[in-house]
Length: 477
Image (tube, rainbow, N blue to C red; front, side, top):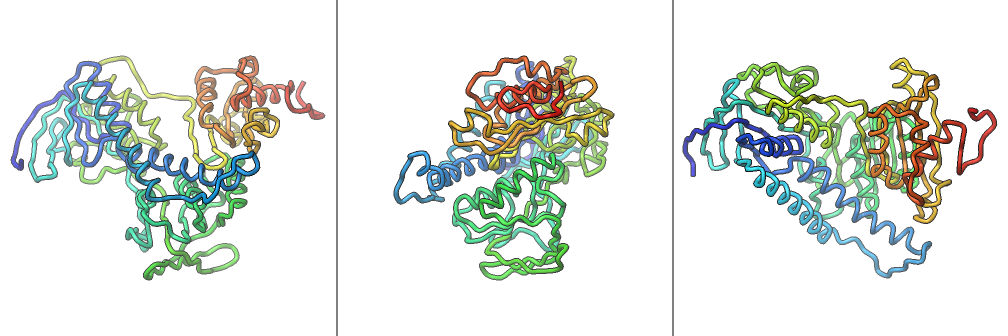
């Protein structure tokens, strides 16, 4: 019921995404009275419009593609195979709802109060919350955590209209497949969802301004992905700038500039995915005295505390990279700092995974990054084609590359393209965090036959002691 109310809480958490709900849950475990404000659905962008629904759709599209393309070769035959988008969307939604209910159950168990509405700071220890029905509450808090995530960057002239021009959330909610799509932006979302569309029969062109897909990733990973996407029929256009857009009923015409000159690309739909920015508008941060830095990120210390001692920030609003697992950890750190526990956010290795074909996983330094950090890097690459599990699973494409310091033998980075790489990249992250030598990886017995053996094999290759590939002349002694 609309009206004006007031309440007091020990900790106010604004935003129920990965950083916010984890922080609230941990605070509840530590005996704090917590109020969590969420304007939409628990789970945030990741659970509702990002990580989880996209992986559900990608999984379904791979089942469909593999039945058509791989099935006959391995002896699995099916007739009249088709992709039912309506059923796929229903299944995807069931996954999202189940996960959302799981978050609600966790918060209830931790005795976290959840309130739907929009929160805005009015001072360093006060905030106003507006409920969907117009009701207002004044919140007095001891501490607060900002976990409002990020919003899609909108390019002037390329604004989504939900019909011919769409963003990632609208792609995930498609009820009818277009015949053709231009993807403007070759980052993670563009590559993952572009491949999903291609898997189910949509003609896809990816347009990227910079010189590679997945800017910021190891160039070898980008080249590997570009090759497989191209083989699958996706047109990849890098170093290509979109200059203007014409919209009409049921189609778009995108004018682009590249080394070869200006041309116009046509499609039924344009999917714009050119990045995200911190969602800090209308939070009243200035009224609370909270400072923002470059890119609009809230400035925080290693305990996630802003320059206002009572206010913390976690997740996409705090600092890059914008990753759910990074937000999880930051949420825990902020909660424990508020509870007075010794804690800090620090890491040597932040893993990342791209759910394409092949799956890409990366953690630690690239060779270029290692050189810039003062190391003398050397790489060794082990091919999946030399792995028994890869042959048995019909997944011989890809490789795993180790970056190590020539002088000390210290493990610096691991970058891989291939089946299940995202499932074992955490082993590499742990090794880097623990300061492992490459010899440590080589001496670790890995189960056979598994894809994780590529870590051990690449380590042995780096050491000049290859097991399942022939030693090359000049291999290190």
